[in-house]
Image (cartoon, rainbow over all chains, first blue to last red; front, side, top):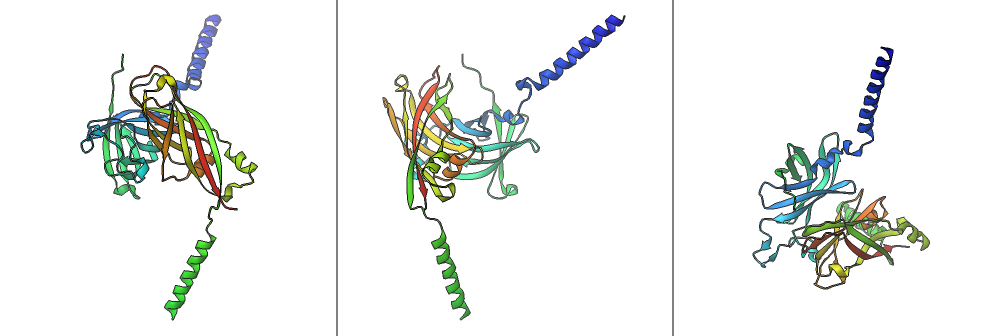
Length: 162
Length: 170
C-alpha cells in the first residue's frame, strides 16, 4: 500500500514538473502578445493588402497587393509620387512600408509609437493600433489622439502555395 | 523708444543664437560593408533583406580625434548593391531603409534595377534625419525591400556598400 502511495506521489510530482517545465522552457508557449498582429490585413476600402511583420523589436506593415496597381496617368505601376522628397518619388507603392515603428504595450494591449503613411495624400500620421477578434482598429491622428480617425482592417487568411 | 530698444534686443539675441549654433565645417568619410539577406523561399513581389549594422563608428571617430559631441550630423552619400550572377534578371527594385531600437525607420536610398545589372548605384534621399542617432544607438538595422519578378527557392543576398559623411565642427 505504501509502495502504491509512493508511486502515485512520484507520478504526480513528475507530471507537475513536466507541466512547469513545458511552461517555462518551451519558447513557443511564451508567446509575445504583440506578435498577434503579424499577418496580412485589408483596410476597409479594400484598395490594398498590408503585410505586418516584426523587425528587431518593432512592427512594420508594407503594401503587398493593390486593387489598382497601375497608375492610369502613367500606365505604369503606382509609385510614391506624393513623397516630400523628390528623389524618393519613384519608390513603388507595392512593397511600400506604410506602417512603421510600432511597439507593443502589454498593459494597454496596444501597438503604439508608430506612424501610418497615406500614399494618396503623402501625409504621415501618428498611429495607435488595437485588435479585437482578428480586426485591427487603426487610429491615425495628428497631435491629439482624440481628434483622429479610425479605420478597421480585417485579417486575411491566405491559402498556402503548393 | 521702448519699441526700438526691444527690437535691438531681439536682433541682438537672434544674432547671438545664429553665431553660437554649431556649424559643420569639417567632414570625414565612413563606410560600412554588409550583406543583407532575405531567407528563402521567397515569393514574387517585395521581400525584406536585412542586416544588423555593426558599425565601429565610435572607434572610427575616436581614432580620428573627433568626439560624438562635435558631430553635427551624418549623411549617407552613396549606396551600392551587388547582385549575384544567378539573380541578375530577378531583382526589379531596391528600397533601402535604416532604423534602430530607439529611432524611427527612414528611407535613405532607392533604385530601379536594370536587367542584367551586377552593380546597382542607389539614388540617395535628400531628406535624411537622425542618422547620427541611429548609427550610435545600441542596435541599428538596415533593410532593403527588394522587389523580385518571380519566386525564389533560395536566400536572396545583397552585398551593400554604404558611404557616410560625418560632418563635424572643431
